[in-house]
Every structure is written in C-alpha cells, then in structure tokens.
Image 1 (tube, rainbow, N blue to C red):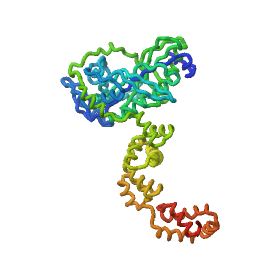
Image 2: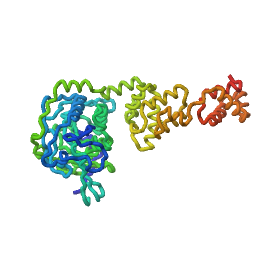
Image 3: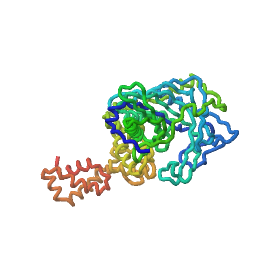
Length: 500
C-alpha cells in the first residue's frame, strides 16, 4: 500500500473542519496499587512490585484503594464534574501479554464523574473543553520488544513484560468532541493537555510526568468537509507522551487525513502510533467498539457510593485553580504575559511562590530560580524542582544578599555549595568564608594599597575622570576574593582620592 500524499496544512484547513477528542490517562501517586498493597515506585527492577492480586493468579481477590477514589473525586470536582451517588466497576475483556488477568478492571456505563469542563486560552481566545466522563481503572504492565529497529513488536526477536505497573490506579479523562477550533486545533489540543496537567499537579494526586508515563494522551482526530453536517471517521493516536507531541500529532493527522480524502480514499477507524523522530503517525490496529470488550459488572468488587458529606469535604479541600493562581501571581509580582509564560513553562511557579512565602521579594526569587538555578538544571539535564535545594534555602541566601552579607557573586558560590550537599546556606558561608568584607577599616587598608599600586589610574580619577574608578575597584575585589561590597569600595576609593 502506497503512502498517501500529505495535504499542506493551510489547504487542509481551507477544505476540512477538524473535530478533536482527547482521552488522557493519569497515574495516581498513591503509595499502593489500585486493588492490592503492592508499592508503586517508578523505576524499580522489573517484576519486583507484584503479588497474586495484580498478577491475576487464581483465587486472589481485589480490594479498592480508598486514596485512589479520593484522588479521582478531587480531579472530577476540579473539572466541575458531577460526582455520581452510585457507580461500579466493570470487567473490560481483551487479551494482551501485559494484562495479567486477561481483562482490565475499569468503568463502563457508570463512571464516577460526569459532565465537566475545562477552559483553556489560545491566542487570546477562550475555548471551553467539555468533559464527558472521568473514570477509574487499573493500569497495565509494560511490554519491551527486543531486537527490532523501532522498539515495536514488528521485527523484534522477542518480548519481555514488566508487571510492576500493572494495577497502578489510573484515571481516564475523556472529552466530548471538540469542534470549531479551525486552524488552532493543534494549539487547542496542546493547551488542554497543558492546563489539565497543571490542574492535576496542583491537586497533589499525581506527578503527571509525561516522560515517565504518569500522564499519557490518546488524541482523536476526524475531518469533515466545510459545510457538511456529519463528522468524519476518527482515528486515535495512542500514548502521546509530551505536550509538543500532542500538538504535532493533531497537525500530522489533519494533513494525512486530508490527503487521503482528497485522493478519494476513506479514513479507517483505527489506533495509530506517533513517531517522535518524524512527527508522523502510522497505523496500529482497528479500533474496537464497546461490544468487542464484552463489558460486564465486576463480580469481586462492591459498588461505590461516595457520601455527599465526603464529597463536600473534598470539595472544600481543593486548592486555588491554576488559572486563578496565575492571574493572581501575575498581578502581585507585576509580570508581563511573556514573563509569566516563561515561569510556568520552566516549572518554577510553585518554587518561586514558596520562596516568596519564605520571606524573599518576588523579583529576587524569580531572578534566582529563572536564571541561576534554571541554568544549573539545564546543565545537569534535570527538572528545576529536582535540584537539591529548597525554596526556603533560596530565600535565606537572598536574605543574606539583602542584608549586605553577600553579593551576587558570593551568593552564587553559596548556591554551588548547597547544591553540592555541603549543608544549609549558613553552613556553606561559614565553611567557605564567604561573607562580604564589611569592615571599613579592613577595606580602607586594602584600598590604600590598591591606590599605591595604581598611581596613574588614581591620578586620572583625581583629575576628574571618575569613570576610571572601575580600574581600581577590580583589584579591590580581587584582593578580597570578591567579598567586598563593590558599591562601598567605590565610595571609599573616591573619598580617599578626594573626589566628591
């Protein structure tokens, strides 16, 4: 079968209207799995976090994790969903090697959370993304295909399965069809995934780290000719694992489907794989319908009936929504839209706000996190939040700078010491002898020597060329190993030279 010719994006949008749908899977950060007591730590050796329940061994019975139900209710409430008064789990029957029971415990026609929404902003326009359902299920294991060129089963010599992930609580958030996005469709999809990630992260129920698979998006795209009334056949691009890839997957499918339709072909309802290297999607398998899964109520679990009192308690515990929080800090910190965007994209909003709560001025807190610490995180290939320094320690360093005990150069050395594990900021300052030289008598003696050693420059300053004083400040800073207050040194030099 020949590869269809892609239609240029602008031409595709001129001829067809895209309709989106996004299914997002989020692993909850509970200490144990959904239906057993196995731990959920990421990165453990394969098949070391398993038991008879999550391996599906005969006679093993599941027990529902209350903390996971609390997590999904919080997500549902944050998305303005209705929390139903009664629901139950179902068995979703299908076979893959990474499904140890040969079925998945999920929810079918009776989800826990329904009819919500999430507003996102794209290029100054607000789009309301309607949420159809938020339901609870268990994650599958992870297959590793060995020997092939692509890491997929085709061409592999053999496959391995790690069941550590099997049974981890998994929340699925399903949007209703998203029409009328036009040429912004890829941007709307990305904005939705971004805002959803921030919302869930703010609740503290998941780390939503897409690179580790704790948040994964299935992107549905269909096209209909301009002026038509019926939506086209959709495809589902599975397990897209970055925000940028969500945007690229939508754009790629629009161009591919438009090319197929323009050539007289038809779109097949199927799952597809997204390729990070090329930005293209390729066919996976035909998409099953609900009846193919042979759903039936899970006989080993009782129905769930969350009390209204419990739901109201959880509603009262919700934090400030991310959109409201961004608007507040932008106003309080005096940030431009671009500055706010940079802070959010760097993952620094929480860190800066905690630093401000610890006593630092907002501008100084932002400077340290967005410049010095962001640079170091980039050099180490680490997330900003993973650096071994706390907002409270950053606030303490800034407190010493504001008090004149440190200058910026010395503060950077303190950051180096803290990040290297040498102790708290005060311990690093004491161990390295980093405090600013603030004794005027000690500083004056050094200045007198510098003036004597640089008589020609001193004469220029005495003669009125005050700008030449910088050539004297440098040697003072060198003599004090950068520990002099440069402003005070300049003032004392001018006084010594009789320049007002």
